[in-house]
Amino acid sequence: MPHSPLRLILDGDALVSNWRWLDARSGEAACGAAVKADGYGLGAQEVVRRLRDAGCRDFFVATWAEAAALREETAGVSLAVLHGVAEEDLAAAEVSPARPVLNSAAQVRRWKAAAGARPCDVMIDTGIGRLGLSPEEARSGLLDGLEIDTLMSHLASADEDAPMNPRQRDAFAGLAEAIPARRRSLANSAGICLGHKYAFDLTRPGLALYGGVPRREAEGHVRQVVRVEAQVVQRKRIEAGASVGYNATWTAREACELAILNIGYADGYLRSFSSRGRGRFDGVELPVAGRVSMDLTAVRCDAAPGLAEGDWVEVDYALPEAAAESGLSQYELLTTLGGRHARIWR
Image (cartoon, rainbow, N blue to C red; front, side, top):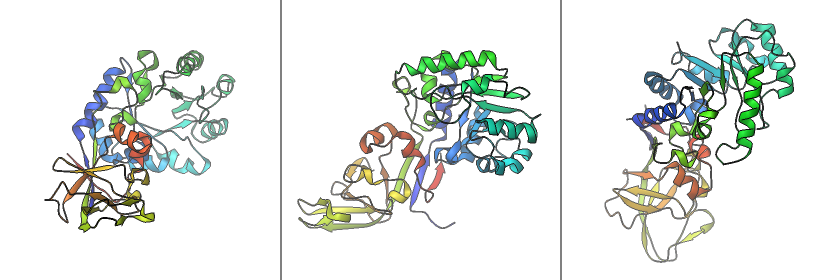
């Protein structure tokens, strides 16, 4: 394959360690893994292989195309499609071992007509206002006749100490008593941190698997999984008064050295890092100078005299710190990593 000047260095041991911590934190509940959006940008196939080998048996994707891409990796384990089943999905769903998570009355009727004898999952909206049947629909008899594997809901504010959290938990517990299902599932990564009362039978972590810290309880337990590295395209000297990047937002106060990195917002290193982000080379900090552009980012490298064209620079991308630096959520930072990176698992 052609050489890529961008790479993600991925720590497989950290991924597995994070899942094991979340599994232990889930108590008696099984701990699954959300691997939608191509494993939050890290490569779903490799993520599933490693977590499956570690003991994970429940995986979640968003669409049937994502399910099809993981068919070999998820053989013998559980795979659920969170966005349910549209009319256009039926042909794929009917031959897939994956289960739909039914979210609306129309999806329930569609699944009953097409494959009603097969197991499915059902989502109930207990307050997030996104996907899911209303509690009234769930109690109406609409679900009669379905073989429900997992009844689930989703927390809206689990990353905060919000009164909505116990309200949603109690509402879901009441519904779960009235609706027959093999398992019940409510907690995402942040929900797992809220304690065993939120775990029910199955948890569905995403962010924390990949190194994100959803709540303070996870600090010191969740390990960084991804490091971002970019190659130097050019090293150059500019004189005092020279500007760098679009719209000349950064001007050199004195003559200085720049390294131009082969990374930009098309690769997930977004403009919010302009004149705020940092690179590192041999332990030396290299501050971003000027605006991040589509494919290129400039960093000051006076303190790294040995840095040369072709060398690799690590871009600071530890998720909690990078989120604070950029103003972006940890989810955005992960899932916006572009498709031009080579992925190197270690």
